[in-house]
Image 1 (cartoon, rainbow, N blue to C red):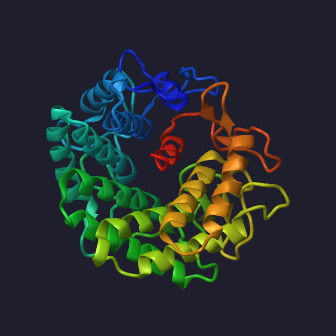
Image 2: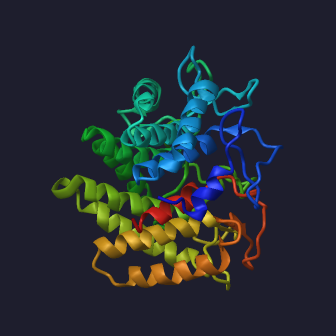
Length: 376
C-alpha cells in the first residue's frame, strides 16, 4: 500500500534524535520550534491509523512516535506526559488533558495496529487518566496539573473534553468496553446543554474552576490558537461529528438528542460562520452575539465542516448535508489543499490569502488526515 501525499508530508516531520518536529509550509522541520506533545501524539496517531489501514511503510514512523512518547515525554517519577521537551531537557512539565487525549488516541490505535509495546503504555496512561483527570462527579476531565499532580488549573475548557470524547470512541474500538461510550455521553451531554443555555445556541469554550461559563476569557487575546476568545465555529462541526459517531457506536442505546443536538449546532454554525463577512470560508470565532471576532480561515475548521457534513449526510434525513459537503470540499480544493507540497495550508486571511497570524507553518496533518479517513 502506497502512502498518500499527506502521509508522505507527515513523514518529513521525523526528527532523527527523537520525536516529530513542527513543519514549515514546504515540509521542512522548523529548527526554532521545540518538541510539542500535541504534535508528537497526533502524528503518532496518524501513523497508527495508517498502519491499521494496512500501510506497512509507516511502521518505522509509528515506532518512532511511540519511542518518543516513552523516552522523551513520559514522566517516569510522577506519571503522565510533559507538554514540551527537547532532546536534552523538559521545557514545560505541565500535564494537560488535551495532550493526554491524543496520547490515548495514539496508544489505543497502535494497539489496534498490533503493537505490543503500546498495550503496556496504554495501561499506564489510563491509570493517570483515571487517577488525575477523569471527574465522575462532573462527567468531565480536569484541564491540567503541575508536574507532581499537586496543583490543578483554575481554568476548565471544553476543547480538552471534546478530544477526550474522541479518545473514548477510539478506546471503545480497541477494548469493546462500553464504559468509554458512557463517559463520552456524559461529556457530550454537558457540552450540548451549555449550547442550549446561551443566546447563540452554540457550544462555548471557557469555564472557571467550578465549571461556570467565563464569557470574557482571553478577550485581550482573541486569536489564541488553543484558547481564543468567544465561540469557535470549527468546534461546533467537530462536536456534531463526534455526537453522530457516538450515536452510531451506542446503536439502539443511543439517546435521540445526540442526533438532534448535532444537527442543531451544525445548522447554527453554518448560518453564522460561513461567508458572513462577504467572502467564502468560515470565520475562526464569533462572540456571544454571533458576530465575527477573528476572521481568519483555519484549515482545521474546513476539514471538520467537511467531515461533519459527510457524516450527517449518511445518517440524517436532510439532503442539504451532501450539498454542503460538495460546496465546502470545492472550497477546500481551491484555497486550502496544496497539491504541490502535499499538505493543507493551515491559515488564510479574510480574503483567502495564505497568512500566519495564528498558525505558523503546517505543524501537523491530524485534521486533514481524519477528513481523508471519512472516505475509507
